[in-house]
Amino acid sequence: MLVQHHMLSRFLLAQPGQYDRSHQRRIQQLLPNSSRLKPAAVMIPLVARPDGYHVILTRRANHLKHHPGQVAFPGGRFETEDGELMNTAIRETQEEIGILCDKKDILGQLPALPTLSGYMVTPFLSTVAASYQPVLDPNEVDSIFEVPVTFLLNPRNMRTQRFTFKGKEHTIYAIPYQEYSIWGATAQIVKALSHQIWVDNR
Image (cartoon, rainbow, N blue to C red):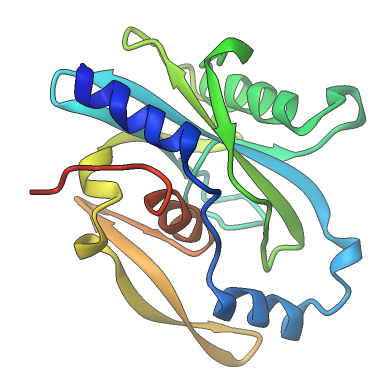
């Protein structure tokens, strides 16, 4: 538990992780009018397990317009009634997977990430109860799973792969885990988080 506390303290004290310049250039080329990006937020839920913290991830429903079947953090588009993006992340997490994150358990946030789907996504990091009971919205989520932080944030598990978008090939990050592939914007967020959280991968 002391190691877990130290890891979270490292997040609170560290400078915010940054996203790759190649990603920023790709957004500028393909979405030059960044002022039209829609605000959104995602939650990075951390749950304490006997072997350390795990991150909860979702696999999106296959019928969705944006990123069907892809692995993602719970989250979605900002709504006016949310008031602030933190509330968006909390609301969407509860709606999508039935887990309520309390404001007092939110540890902080990462810089906003522009995505090719036209959103400016702000990630928030929160701890959740180990006894959580997920309730999935089948309109949004196909399944959820946990990944140990020591695996997810280990740079040795980060791969690169080619991705075609609007007829052009791009190099993106991907993290294979069991039968899942964590890639795209989610992998970008993970990479930024890996620069901000201390993990002992010895």
